[in-house]
Image 1 (cartoon, helix red, strand yellow):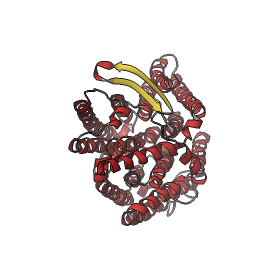
Image 2 (cartoon, one colour; image 1 turned 90 degrees about the vertical axis):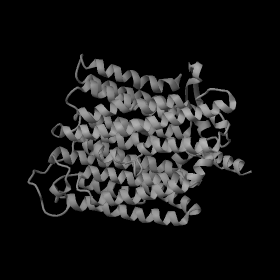
Image 3 (tube, helix red, strand yellow; image 1 turned 60 degrees about the vertical axis):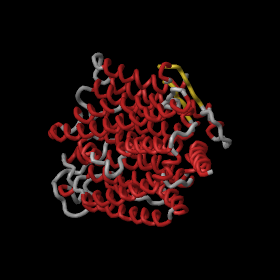
Image 4 (cartoon, rainbow, N blue to C red; image 1 turned 120 degrees about the horizontal axis):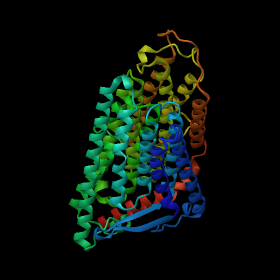
Length: 505
């Protein structure tokens, strides 16, 4: 029952937020905040109830906590949700970042508050659903449910002076998302019907689909379909075209939800589905995936360096880091996979903080062009220091979670593909150039505009300090996250290797 509440609470909070606007314009944000906090509290309760199972070392075919309710039985579709150590880590961090996104929107959203929080909570519901779905049809439903509300969040609450650009960015997001969804649906149906042909059982159940391998040629086609669907959402070069436009047009809270939470559903899905459902094809495809990861690292870094728009710079930086996560996933090394988990969380925190800080600068200067800034170090309080910290964290300084994630991914990859690891390390050096470029262009040099000295508001200050605390916690005590996610990550890697050995025998 607790598991179902993780879906029920945010879903109904979206409708309550929408209708409560008629009673009072401030009610929607309070209902949305309460909905996310309640979801977070239930997650904590599940975590402590199942703590012994999250830390178990023995492989178990059952999930730590699972709920199965028949849904469309004629087609073998179930409302099948479950949770394990990997899911709980992603869920807790998604809830925390969504709370931060609501606080960011607190004074920023001044029109149609009810409809804004209706869409926001639907996106949050979709994200929660993706992390706990273990029926492929249900997973697809949650994958698609985020598309339309996210479109409205980009179109209706972005910069009102750039309506054409807002529509263009939103349309790009919708077209890329719809393409991703159609490819995913086609691949799921091909997988399910292939399983039906060999077993005469029509099912979308994740556990059952794991049991019996399908024809290798069909498996390769299905695997490519899953990979393309997730690579578009991640995004990986050359499927990245939507992110820079969407990010540059989104408001701060929307950017936090997109880059901090939404993008991280794709690497989760790659780990959960591609490695375990298609081990033979994934092994054959791994070198291509690692090449695409390296391409994303260098291409993202190069374009980030050449950007004058601060939000586009952050977007390309995120693409570069997604490349690093991709090569970690396809390295077939358990240390690298643990690094992927830490890197997903750390990158979410860093990019969310940079989005918030860039939003603060835009609020004061009404521009995202770094050439129109300069000399701000002594003219504003807190923001330069925080920007320097998160820029350095972005390139992976020791003491932050980014350093741990990058170290684990690169050292794990080095054991398998040393040359690829060296190339990826060189790519991280490039990231230091564009990270320091932000600081140089914005905070040093002559003043470009006359303005009075200002402080950051207490609310934004508390949010940034909370993000620093979480990032440093990940950097100093990553063992907690590794312990919680160890069992499912170990099982994913073990299942992957066992399946390959069976195929070779």
